[in-house]
Image (cartoon, rainbow, N blue to C red; front, side, top):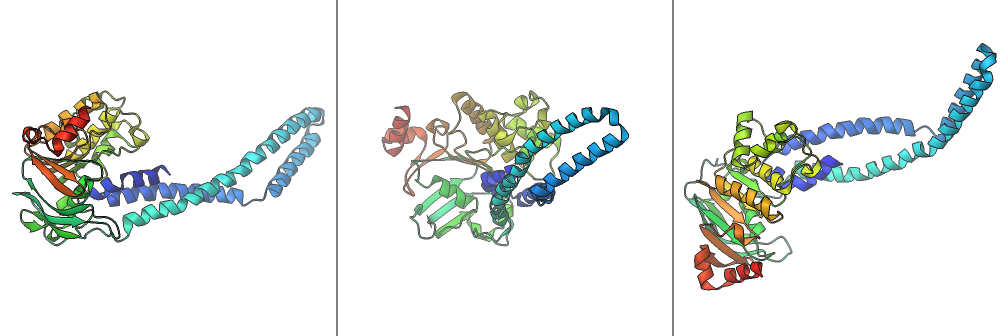
Amino acid sequence: MQTVNEFLSGIRQIMVFGTQRAWLGRFHKHNAAQKEFYIKDSTWLTVPRNVMEFTVVGAILGFLALSRAVNPGNFMEHLSIAGMFTVALFQLFPSLTSIGSTRMEVVGLMPDAELVYQELTQHQSRRMGGTRTFQSLKEGIAFERVTFAHRGREVLLNQLSLVIERGRVTALVGPTGSGKTTLVNLLLSLFEPTEGRLLVDGVDLREYQVASWLSRIGFVSQDPFIYNATVRENIIFGRTGFSQEDIEQAATIANAHRFILELPYGYDTVVGERGMKLSGGQQQCLAIARAVLHDPQILIFDEATSSLDTASERLVQDAIEAISKDRTVLIIAHRLSTVRHADKIVVLDRGRIVESGAHDELMREHGRYFELVASSHA
């Protein structure tokens, strides 16, 4: 079920990076191996226990009869060995039959696997996109009176208007539930505005092909989603057309190349389930290398340092600053220390923008941002 768990954990990144086909191939490979095991297991378990016991006893009696006929002098020795073997075998029968309950547990989890498969293959409710191919960002991105709410639920964004300028660093801050992640999901084409428009260089985002738009975006989330594969595979993330030089260049930009070389097998080191062989900061640096591998024009960091300790945060923050040059960057931050150098800080509250400006400017105003900074130091 490890592959299924990875599907569930990384579904957002899989959709954003457009690697559904690669991950479906991974799923089919593991599913085929599980199917083969299941067939063998089922074949064994279809034999009733009493038939198995009768067969074993018959085989042992046949062995003893043959032994007595061939070598009568050693019959008693063979008899004692056969007796111990029989006792041991019958003690193992309960364990062998318990395999059936294990098989039923596996079978019981199959519906979850089927749901994951359907999620990746069925028609998605997110927007399907238009026909225009997105080439490059020339001016900026504008949210024009955007409102969003899931059907039958409360409004998450309410008449929000925001401009993200090309080549600048824009930060989104605010309390939990203020609409920061929802705004990013709209930008990633995971959802479509309920009202209003999202414009890219003055063109409605819905006119662009989703794949061409996402190909210009690098995304790093709070959960780096490192799966049980090599460092190289985690950086490539199911995409094709990248050389070892490309991978190492991305890792260098992301502050990851040095510690990767210190791993037992370098880029061929298997990092374990959920990246357990790496620290939190190292995992996040791999996620950043994954995001910059295709040299995106737009970078989105969704609370990329919120769960890290101070040392790891500094490592990741240095990587973010290095790759933010000459790119359009959007940062969602829980730790306000990571956004103080942003060109523009936007403060959200209950789906609305309540303040925006540079750090020093907002601190002088003694408004909502000032309160957030003060509470973070309390």
